[in-house]
Image (cartoon, rainbow, N blue to C red; front, side, top):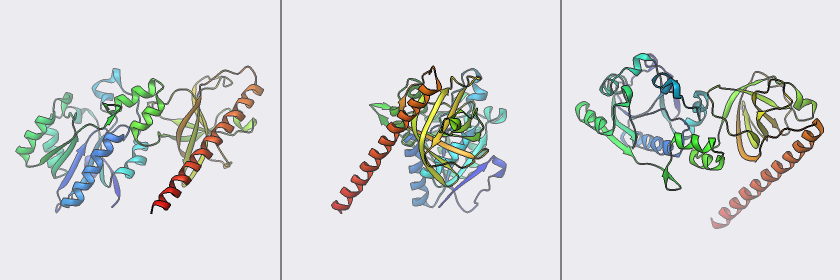
Length: 327
């Protein structure tokens, strides 16, 4: 079973002979709470021979509903396309969140989309799910609509971390408060920064550390400024490396840049798509008086990151050996 991404209601083709199990939400982050919901949808679809359907929205509903308080995104649409197949198999219906959709009441959304378009027989949502105009629909309303339109509702409870429910807003808060490790643990996967590789000022290459400069989305939430261990995906290649997020004080533009130096890699990738995953925070961004000071620090950063990579490989090998001995 695979994942099929479908943009817009008009492109959704109903399987007339098959009803569906559906979940709905923005799913920003695809965090561990989201993963529990998606797992349950897939299991239900397989057990009852129902089409598994994930309904999500683009752009984020708050772009229209509350434009003065639009959250920065944990996962852009491109990043969702990368992560969702790890946790879900079925149809992903991406609805254009426009003025028409914004004005649908809870019942209209259920009747016009879940019933008429998707043919839902079961709806699985999180405990805090809200839907319809002004988020006026709640779990009780959804269950009442289930009775009216003949579908079952299943509610998934919160997934806890440090005795508190995981949520996208809590992960954003952890990122903004420099609690990167906690954010990663709540996500349950590496944090991705997607973009196309663009030309920078060329300083890294002149110093012997060429970097891929990532043209990231303007509404993407970046981890705090500093140096990180990372890995990256370019096409079918996975490469380890180190990356910098922040203001490069030798760059006259003084903008926030995301750039990665990939180890044992020196291919021209300008214009190509890249996913960069910062894994370990190494140090904060600092201003260096001279280029020589910067080079010495980069050399030290690389040494520290290679030690981290080597340690992790030893741990993985040890775990595999212990598992093999147990079997």
